[in-house]
Image 1: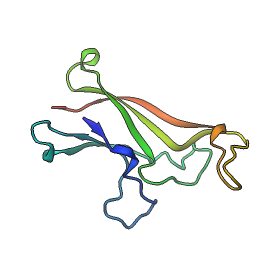
Image 2: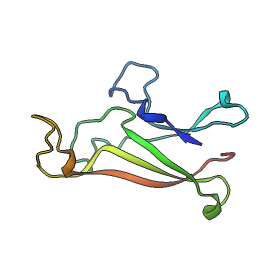
Image 3: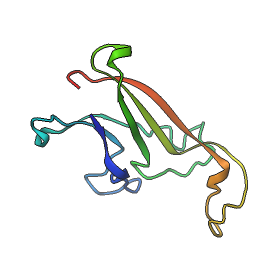
Image 4: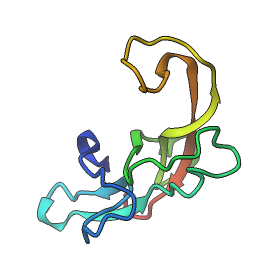
Length: 124
């Protein structure tokens, strides 16, 4: 099991690119890496929603799936823990100078959304 590497899947919202996608989890068979398949996708639908203090939508794929861990010893077969980093879902923001230049976001003074999730992937 692996996640998309290096946030390489980021695309502009509404991109006409047919490959535009949110972050994904992949099952890659060791015996047949060419048989890799997507087994889950990150749902970015909360971006710009009522819990988001910055209403501009982020790029598709700006939310990362990361830190996938085999959790089968604690939760049974086919169980994995994943972390979703919701980089464009700001749940709190305060003004401040981050030395990013005029018009840049105050990244030091924000708290973004995220989630630790238990996922079951049969045959994973």
